[in-house]
Amino acid sequence: MTGVLNGIRVLDFGRYIAGPYCGALLGDFGAEVIRIEKREGSEDRWTMPVGEDGTGAAFMQMNRNKLSITLDPAAPEGREAVRRLVAVSDVVIANMPLAQLKELGLDYETLEKINPRIIVFMNSCFGSVGPFAKRPGFETIAQGMSGSMHLTGDGITPMRVAVPANDFGTATFGALGILAALLERQKSGRGQLVETSLLHTALNLSDANLIEEALLKKDRIAKGNRSWHSGPSDCYRTKDGWIVLMVIGPGLFKRWARLMGEEKLWTEDPRFATDQLRGDNGEALSIRHQQWCASRTTKEALAELEKAHIPAGPIYSLPQTLADEHIKEAGFLEEIDYPGLPKPAPVVTTPVKLSRTPGKVHRRPPLLGEHTHDVLTRIARYTEAELDALRAKDVI
Image 1 (cartoon, rainbow, N blue to C red):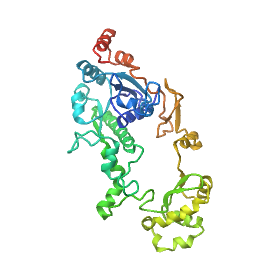
Image 2: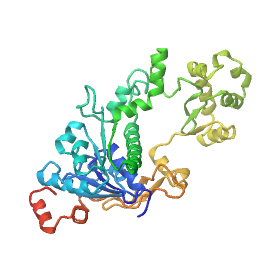
Image 3: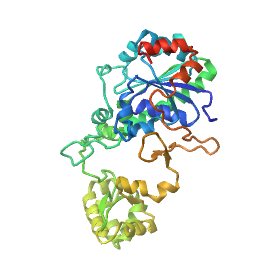
Image 4: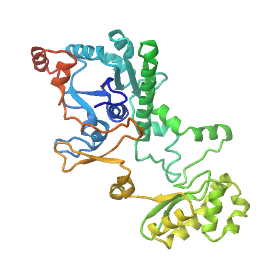
Protein backbone atom coordinates (compact mmCIF):
# COMPACT_ATOMS: atom_id res chain seq x y z
CA MET A 1 0.00 0.00 0.00
CA THR A 2 1.03 3.63 -0.51
CA GLY A 3 0.49 6.31 2.09
CA VAL A 4 1.98 9.36 3.79
CA LEU A 5 4.42 7.13 5.71
CA ASN A 6 5.16 4.70 2.90
CA GLY A 7 8.81 3.61 3.19
CA ILE A 8 8.95 4.11 6.98
CA ARG A 9 9.66 0.91 8.91
CA VAL A 10 8.56 0.60 12.55
CA LEU A 11 9.58 -2.06 15.06
CA ASP A 12 6.77 -2.33 17.60
CA PHE A 13 7.78 -3.82 20.96
CA GLY A 14 4.73 -2.18 22.54
CA ARG A 15 2.38 -3.85 24.99
CA TYR A 16 -1.26 -3.24 25.95
CA ILE A 17 -2.49 0.05 24.44
CA ALA A 18 -0.24 3.13 24.31
CA GLY A 19 2.61 1.57 22.34
CA PRO A 20 0.58 -0.73 20.08
CA TYR A 21 -2.02 1.92 19.21
CA CYS A 22 0.74 4.39 18.36
CA GLY A 23 2.04 1.76 15.93
CA ALA A 24 -1.46 1.20 14.54
CA LEU A 25 -1.82 4.91 13.78
CA LEU A 26 1.49 4.91 11.91
CA GLY A 27 0.43 1.77 10.05
CA ASP A 28 -2.86 3.39 9.04
CA PHE A 29 -0.86 5.99 7.13
CA GLY A 30 1.34 3.50 5.32
CA ALA A 31 4.26 2.67 7.62
CA GLU A 32 5.46 -0.93 7.62
CA VAL A 33 4.89 -1.87 11.25
CA ILE A 34 6.45 -5.06 12.60
CA ARG A 35 4.92 -6.25 15.85
CA ILE A 36 7.53 -8.15 17.93
CA GLU A 37 6.16 -10.50 20.59
CA LYS A 38 7.32 -13.24 22.90
CA ARG A 39 7.01 -16.77 21.54
CA GLU A 40 3.90 -17.32 23.65
CA GLY A 41 2.48 -13.93 22.65
CA SER A 42 2.42 -10.64 24.52
CA GLU A 43 -0.01 -10.20 27.39
CA ASP A 44 -2.23 -7.78 25.48
CA ARG A 45 -2.84 -10.32 22.71
CA TRP A 46 -5.01 -12.36 25.11
CA THR A 47 -6.86 -9.56 26.96
CA MET A 48 -10.70 -9.70 26.63
CA PRO A 49 -10.63 -12.92 24.56
CA VAL A 50 -13.04 -13.08 21.61
CA GLY A 51 -11.35 -15.52 19.22
CA GLU A 52 -11.18 -19.30 19.24
CA ASP A 53 -7.47 -19.13 20.05
CA GLY A 54 -8.01 -16.60 22.85
CA THR A 55 -7.04 -13.52 20.85
CA GLY A 56 -8.43 -10.46 22.61
CA ALA A 57 -10.78 -7.68 21.58
CA ALA A 58 -8.26 -4.89 22.26
CA PHE A 59 -5.67 -6.66 20.09
CA MET A 60 -8.05 -6.34 17.13
CA GLN A 61 -8.01 -2.56 17.39
CA MET A 62 -4.39 -1.98 18.39
CA ASN A 63 -2.73 -4.20 15.81
CA ARG A 64 -4.38 -3.71 12.45
CA ASN A 65 -1.97 -3.02 9.61
CA LYS A 66 0.93 -4.89 11.25
CA LEU A 67 3.20 -7.85 10.56
CA SER A 68 3.92 -10.20 13.47
CA ILE A 69 7.13 -11.95 14.44
CA THR A 70 8.03 -13.84 17.60
CA LEU A 71 11.42 -13.12 19.13
CA ASP A 72 13.14 -13.25 22.50
CA PRO A 73 15.14 -9.98 22.66
CA ALA A 74 16.76 -11.03 25.94
CA ALA A 75 18.61 -13.98 24.40
CA PRO A 76 21.99 -13.21 22.78
CA GLU A 77 20.72 -14.49 19.43
CA GLY A 78 17.60 -12.39 19.87
CA ARG A 79 19.68 -9.28 20.46
CA GLU A 80 21.49 -9.96 17.21
CA ALA A 81 18.15 -10.21 15.39
CA VAL A 82 17.08 -6.90 16.94
CA ARG A 83 20.39 -5.36 15.86
CA ARG A 84 19.85 -6.44 12.26
CA LEU A 85 16.30 -5.11 12.21
CA VAL A 86 17.17 -1.79 13.89
CA ALA A 87 19.93 -1.22 11.35
CA VAL A 88 17.35 -1.07 8.54
CA SER A 89 14.43 0.54 10.40
CA ASP A 90 13.27 4.08 11.17
CA VAL A 91 11.30 3.84 14.42
CA VAL A 92 11.30 1.63 17.51
CA ILE A 93 8.24 1.64 19.80
CA ALA A 94 8.71 0.35 23.35
CA ASN A 95 6.36 1.19 26.20
CA MET A 96 8.17 0.04 29.31
CA PRO A 97 10.25 1.73 32.04
CA LEU A 98 13.77 2.87 31.18
CA ALA A 99 15.42 0.24 33.38
CA GLN A 100 13.69 -2.54 31.47
CA LEU A 101 14.60 -0.97 28.14
CA LYS A 102 18.26 -0.90 29.15
CA GLU A 103 18.09 -4.50 30.35
CA LEU A 104 16.81 -5.59 26.91
CA GLY A 105 19.14 -3.29 24.97
CA LEU A 106 16.20 -1.30 23.58
CA ASP A 107 17.12 2.06 25.09
CA TYR A 108 17.91 4.95 22.75
CA GLU A 109 21.61 5.16 23.65
CA THR A 110 22.12 1.50 22.66
CA LEU A 111 20.03 1.62 19.48
CA GLU A 112 21.54 4.92 18.30
CA LYS A 113 24.93 3.21 18.08
CA ILE A 114 23.42 0.66 15.71
CA ASN A 115 21.54 3.21 13.61
CA PRO A 116 22.11 6.97 14.18
CA ARG A 117 18.89 7.69 12.25
CA ILE A 118 16.69 5.60 14.53
CA ILE A 119 13.79 7.26 16.37
CA VAL A 120 12.84 5.55 19.63
CA PHE A 121 9.40 6.07 21.16
CA MET A 122 9.62 5.29 24.86
CA ASN A 123 6.54 5.29 27.07
CA SER A 124 6.02 4.38 30.72
CA CYS A 125 3.48 5.18 33.41
CA PHE A 126 5.50 7.79 35.32
CA GLY A 127 8.30 8.95 32.99
CA SER A 128 12.05 8.40 33.30
CA VAL A 129 12.77 11.06 35.95
CA GLY A 130 11.52 11.27 39.53
CA PRO A 131 10.99 8.94 42.51
CA PHE A 132 8.39 6.83 40.67
CA ALA A 133 10.45 6.41 37.48
CA LYS A 134 11.23 2.73 38.08
CA ARG A 135 7.71 1.74 39.05
CA PRO A 136 5.42 -0.16 36.69
CA GLY A 137 1.95 1.22 36.19
CA PHE A 138 -1.23 1.33 34.15
CA GLU A 139 -3.79 3.85 32.91
CA THR A 140 -5.96 3.85 36.03
CA ILE A 141 -2.99 4.66 38.27
CA ALA A 142 -2.33 7.75 36.16
CA GLN A 143 -6.01 8.67 36.47
CA GLY A 144 -5.76 8.46 40.24
CA MET A 145 -2.67 10.64 40.51
CA SER A 146 -3.97 13.28 38.08
CA GLY A 147 -7.01 14.06 40.23
CA SER A 148 -9.52 12.93 37.62
CA MET A 149 -10.77 9.96 39.67
CA HIS A 150 -11.38 12.30 42.62
CA LEU A 151 -13.56 14.45 40.34
CA THR A 152 -15.51 11.49 38.93
CA GLY A 153 -18.36 9.69 40.68
CA ASP A 154 -20.60 10.60 43.60
CA GLY A 155 -18.13 12.59 45.70
CA ILE A 156 -17.76 9.75 48.19
CA THR A 157 -15.95 6.95 46.34
CA PRO A 158 -13.43 7.91 43.65
CA MET A 159 -14.45 6.52 40.26
CA ARG A 160 -12.26 5.54 37.34
CA VAL A 161 -13.22 6.51 33.81
CA ALA A 162 -14.27 3.25 32.12
CA VAL A 163 -12.38 3.87 28.88
CA PRO A 164 -8.56 4.23 28.83
CA ALA A 165 -8.41 7.83 27.62
CA ASN A 166 -4.85 8.35 28.90
CA ASP A 167 -3.59 5.29 27.02
CA PHE A 168 -5.10 6.48 23.75
CA GLY A 169 -4.04 10.06 24.38
CA THR A 170 -0.48 8.91 25.04
CA ALA A 171 -0.49 6.85 21.84
CA THR A 172 -1.63 9.91 19.90
CA PHE A 173 0.99 12.15 21.51
CA GLY A 174 3.59 9.49 20.71
CA ALA A 175 2.56 9.40 17.06
CA LEU A 176 2.75 13.21 16.97
CA GLY A 177 6.25 13.10 18.48
CA ILE A 178 7.40 10.47 16.00
CA LEU A 179 6.12 12.52 13.06
CA ALA A 180 7.92 15.60 14.42
CA ALA A 181 11.13 13.58 14.82
CA LEU A 182 10.82 12.25 11.26
CA LEU A 183 10.47 15.80 9.96
CA GLU A 184 13.49 16.97 11.95
CA ARG A 185 15.52 14.01 10.69
CA GLN A 186 15.07 15.28 7.15
CA LYS A 187 17.14 18.31 8.18
CA SER A 188 19.70 16.80 10.55
CA GLY A 189 19.95 13.21 9.32
CA ARG A 190 19.74 12.03 12.94
CA GLY A 191 17.13 10.27 15.01
CA GLN A 192 16.19 11.06 18.59
CA LEU A 193 14.28 9.84 21.64
CA VAL A 194 10.53 10.54 21.81
CA GLU A 195 9.25 10.09 25.37
CA THR A 196 5.75 10.10 26.82
CA SER A 197 4.16 8.87 30.04
CA LEU A 198 0.62 8.02 31.05
CA LEU A 199 0.79 10.38 34.03
CA HIS A 200 1.97 13.28 31.86
CA THR A 201 -0.96 12.65 29.51
CA ALA A 202 -3.41 12.41 32.43
CA LEU A 203 -2.14 15.74 33.77
CA ASN A 204 -2.64 17.30 30.33
CA LEU A 205 -6.26 16.16 30.31
CA SER A 206 -6.82 17.46 33.86
CA ASP A 207 -4.85 20.68 33.55
CA ALA A 208 -7.74 23.19 33.64
CA ASN A 209 -8.89 21.68 36.94
CA LEU A 210 -5.34 21.85 38.31
CA ILE A 211 -4.93 25.50 37.27
CA GLU A 212 -8.23 26.44 38.91
CA GLU A 213 -7.23 24.67 42.11
CA ALA A 214 -3.76 26.24 42.20
CA LEU A 215 -5.15 29.75 41.72
CA LEU A 216 -8.53 29.68 43.50
CA LYS A 217 -8.26 26.80 46.02
CA LYS A 218 -11.74 25.43 45.23
CA ASP A 219 -10.93 21.87 46.36
CA ARG A 220 -13.75 20.53 44.20
CA ILE A 221 -15.31 17.13 44.71
CA ALA A 222 -17.29 14.99 42.30
CA LYS A 223 -21.00 15.68 41.87
CA GLY A 224 -22.11 13.01 39.46
CA ASN A 225 -22.60 14.14 35.87
CA ARG A 226 -23.27 17.81 36.60
CA SER A 227 -20.77 20.38 35.40
CA TRP A 228 -19.02 22.66 37.90
CA HIS A 229 -18.81 25.49 35.39
CA SER A 230 -22.13 25.72 33.50
CA GLY A 231 -25.69 24.47 33.49
CA PRO A 232 -27.89 22.74 32.90
CA SER A 233 -25.23 20.19 31.99
CA ASP A 234 -26.11 16.71 33.19
CA CYS A 235 -27.58 13.31 32.30
CA TYR A 236 -31.35 12.95 32.28
CA ARG A 237 -33.77 10.04 32.26
CA THR A 238 -36.46 10.04 29.57
CA LYS A 239 -39.51 7.80 29.32
CA ASP A 240 -37.46 5.12 27.56
CA GLY A 241 -33.78 5.87 28.15
CA TRP A 242 -31.23 8.57 28.95
CA ILE A 243 -29.83 11.68 27.28
CA VAL A 244 -26.93 13.99 28.03
CA LEU A 245 -27.29 17.77 27.67
CA MET A 246 -24.70 20.56 27.73
CA VAL A 247 -25.65 24.22 27.99
CA ILE A 248 -22.66 26.59 27.95
CA GLY A 249 -22.82 30.33 27.33
CA PRO A 250 -25.61 32.93 27.66
CA GLY A 251 -27.04 32.30 24.21
CA LEU A 252 -27.57 28.60 24.82
CA PHE A 253 -28.94 29.26 28.30
CA LYS A 254 -31.51 31.70 26.93
CA ARG A 255 -32.60 29.17 24.29
CA TRP A 256 -32.91 26.49 26.97
CA ALA A 257 -35.02 28.75 29.19
CA ARG A 258 -37.23 29.61 26.21
CA LEU A 259 -37.65 25.89 25.47
CA MET A 260 -38.81 25.39 29.04
CA GLY A 261 -41.38 28.16 28.45
CA GLU A 262 -39.84 30.10 31.33
CA GLU A 263 -37.33 32.50 29.78
CA LYS A 264 -37.68 35.36 32.29
CA LEU A 265 -37.85 33.03 35.29
CA TRP A 266 -34.37 31.70 34.63
CA THR A 267 -32.55 34.49 32.77
CA GLU A 268 -33.53 37.20 35.27
CA ASP A 269 -32.63 35.15 38.35
CA PRO A 270 -29.25 36.41 39.70
CA ARG A 271 -28.29 32.85 40.71
CA PHE A 272 -27.94 32.02 37.01
CA ALA A 273 -26.41 35.23 35.65
CA THR A 274 -23.16 33.65 34.44
CA ASP A 275 -21.92 30.24 33.37
CA GLN A 276 -20.02 29.83 36.63
CA LEU A 277 -23.05 30.77 38.70
CA ARG A 278 -25.11 28.32 36.69
CA GLY A 279 -22.55 25.67 37.52
CA ASP A 280 -22.53 26.63 41.20
CA ASN A 281 -26.33 26.44 41.30
CA GLY A 282 -26.73 23.68 38.76
CA GLU A 283 -28.85 21.35 40.90
CA ALA A 284 -31.95 23.50 40.39
CA LEU A 285 -31.37 23.58 36.65
CA SER A 286 -30.92 19.81 36.51
CA ILE A 287 -34.12 19.25 38.49
CA ARG A 288 -36.08 21.42 36.03
CA HIS A 289 -34.67 19.74 32.97
CA GLN A 290 -35.30 16.30 34.46
CA GLN A 291 -38.97 17.26 34.87
CA TRP A 292 -39.06 18.24 31.20
CA CYS A 293 -37.41 14.96 30.07
CA ALA A 294 -39.62 12.72 32.21
CA SER A 295 -42.65 13.30 29.98
CA ARG A 296 -40.81 12.64 26.72
CA THR A 297 -39.18 9.73 24.97
CA THR A 298 -35.52 10.02 24.08
CA LYS A 299 -36.42 10.59 20.43
CA GLU A 300 -38.95 13.30 21.31
CA ALA A 301 -36.61 15.09 23.72
CA LEU A 302 -33.70 15.09 21.27
CA ALA A 303 -35.91 16.33 18.42
CA GLU A 304 -37.07 19.33 20.46
CA LEU A 305 -33.54 20.09 21.67
CA GLU A 306 -32.20 19.91 18.12
CA LYS A 307 -34.91 22.28 16.91
CA ALA A 308 -33.88 24.70 19.67
CA HIS A 309 -30.19 24.31 18.67
CA ILE A 310 -29.19 22.96 22.08
CA PRO A 311 -26.40 20.31 22.14
CA ALA A 312 -27.68 16.96 23.40
CA GLY A 313 -27.35 13.30 22.57
CA PRO A 314 -28.51 9.83 23.55
CA ILE A 315 -26.70 7.76 26.15
CA TYR A 316 -26.26 4.35 24.56
CA SER A 317 -25.65 0.85 25.74
CA LEU A 318 -22.95 -0.95 23.74
CA PRO A 319 -25.51 -2.72 21.48
CA GLN A 320 -27.12 0.64 20.75
CA THR A 321 -23.77 2.18 19.87
CA LEU A 322 -23.10 -0.63 17.38
CA ALA A 323 -26.55 -0.16 15.84
CA ASP A 324 -26.43 3.64 15.53
CA GLU A 325 -27.08 4.86 11.99
CA HIS A 326 -24.82 7.91 12.24
CA ILE A 327 -21.84 5.82 13.35
CA LYS A 328 -22.49 3.42 10.47
CA GLU A 329 -23.00 6.07 7.78
CA ALA A 330 -20.01 8.13 8.90
CA GLY A 331 -17.76 5.10 8.45
CA PHE A 332 -16.43 5.17 12.00
CA LEU A 333 -16.38 1.35 12.20
CA GLU A 334 -15.01 -1.16 9.73
CA GLU A 335 -15.68 -4.88 9.94
CA ILE A 336 -12.48 -6.93 9.78
CA ASP A 337 -12.24 -10.68 9.37
CA TYR A 338 -9.83 -12.58 11.61
CA PRO A 339 -9.33 -16.34 11.79
CA GLY A 340 -11.37 -17.90 14.59
CA LEU A 341 -13.78 -15.02 15.22
CA PRO A 342 -17.51 -15.88 15.19
CA LYS A 343 -18.02 -12.96 12.79
CA PRO A 344 -16.04 -9.90 11.60
CA ALA A 345 -14.86 -7.53 14.33
CA PRO A 346 -16.03 -3.88 14.19
CA VAL A 347 -12.72 -2.00 14.39
CA VAL A 348 -12.76 1.79 14.69
CA THR A 349 -11.24 3.40 11.62
CA THR A 350 -8.41 5.97 11.59
CA PRO A 351 -9.63 8.78 13.90
CA VAL A 352 -8.27 11.62 11.75
CA LYS A 353 -9.24 12.11 8.10
CA LEU A 354 -6.94 13.47 5.40
CA SER A 355 -8.74 14.53 2.24
CA ARG A 356 -6.10 13.40 -0.28
CA THR A 357 -4.04 10.79 1.58
CA PRO A 358 -6.32 9.21 4.17
CA GLY A 359 -5.25 6.55 6.59
CA LYS A 360 -7.07 3.26 6.33
CA VAL A 361 -7.21 -0.29 7.59
CA HIS A 362 -5.52 -2.31 4.85
CA ARG A 363 -4.45 -5.43 6.74
CA ARG A 364 -6.17 -7.50 9.44
CA PRO A 365 -4.36 -7.96 12.77
CA PRO A 366 -1.67 -10.67 12.46
CA LEU A 367 -1.68 -14.16 13.87
CA LEU A 368 1.08 -14.78 16.40
CA GLY A 369 4.36 -15.08 14.51
CA GLU A 370 2.58 -15.08 11.17
CA HIS A 371 5.36 -13.13 9.43
CA THR A 372 8.45 -14.30 11.33
CA HIS A 373 9.94 -16.11 8.34
CA ASP A 374 9.18 -13.31 5.88
CA VAL A 375 10.54 -10.48 8.08
CA LEU A 376 13.72 -12.25 9.16
CA THR A 377 14.61 -13.42 5.66
CA ARG A 378 13.48 -10.40 3.65
CA ILE A 379 14.52 -7.61 6.04
CA ALA A 380 17.09 -9.05 8.46
CA ARG A 381 18.67 -11.29 5.77
CA TYR A 382 18.67 -14.52 7.75
CA THR A 383 19.27 -17.78 5.93
CA GLU A 384 17.08 -20.84 6.39
CA ALA A 385 19.87 -22.53 8.35
CA GLU A 386 20.13 -19.52 10.69
CA LEU A 387 16.38 -19.57 11.27
CA ASP A 388 16.49 -23.27 12.08
CA ALA A 389 19.17 -22.54 14.67
CA LEU A 390 17.04 -19.78 16.23
CA ARG A 391 14.05 -22.14 16.43
CA ALA A 392 16.16 -24.83 18.01
CA LYS A 393 17.14 -22.41 20.78
CA ASP A 394 13.55 -21.14 21.23
CA VAL A 395 14.57 -17.63 20.19
CA ILE A 396 11.75 -17.41 17.62
